[in-house]
Image (tube, rainbow, N blue to C red; front, side, top):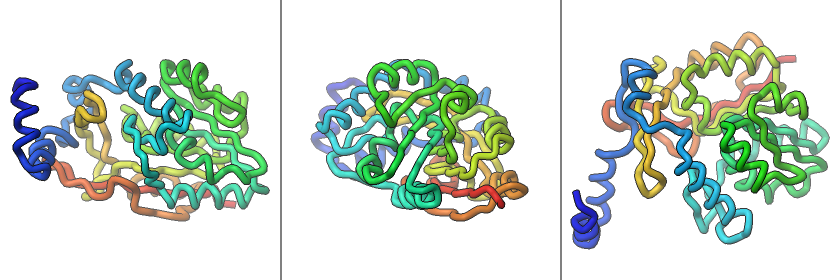
Length: 271
């Protein structure tokens, strides 16, 4: 379809029809046979296009030109994940008003910038992001400050900082082997583990899907797990208590034979 025809349709069709058409072209497709099959059909997450879009959006937030950023999209109105904010402030309360976070897959500081105004009264704040090398280089150059740092691995972060909590916000489902990272986290024994905006299946089995991102966000596609919540809870149960299981931004998903939704989990190390 040519750009001219797209513009004509946009002007003449009702907005709900445009959204309906888009829902068939974008979203989650599958389930796929395995990660390899989904990856073959995808463009991947390490695109410089994605990095530049996220960078430019977050620079606007940092300069005060926008209120909020999520998934590279800027907003003039904040849309908070209140459960995550409540949990982080609860953790700070248990630690003498101090908060030291390892934000795994935290982009260039999306969660940090979204919530920083609520952290101003903390006695101490350290926010450490572990990301892909291109994001780390960009983060160090453009976003590092006295609170925000960037690292290439969990090991590198732990050699410099002592985070008590690790956060996975819309991150663990984009790893080919999520349970390898989760085992590393389990063995380290963080005092607190938080999952937010994590895609879980409806029927309880781990499934791989292909996620196609709408072009108004950025033009990309990549494999995405819909994980079994029961399996994840069972994985952490020997060492951790499940403190909270909550609805996350994004809600329920029913697209192209994929059924599940975004949820959050909060684990605390057993004493």
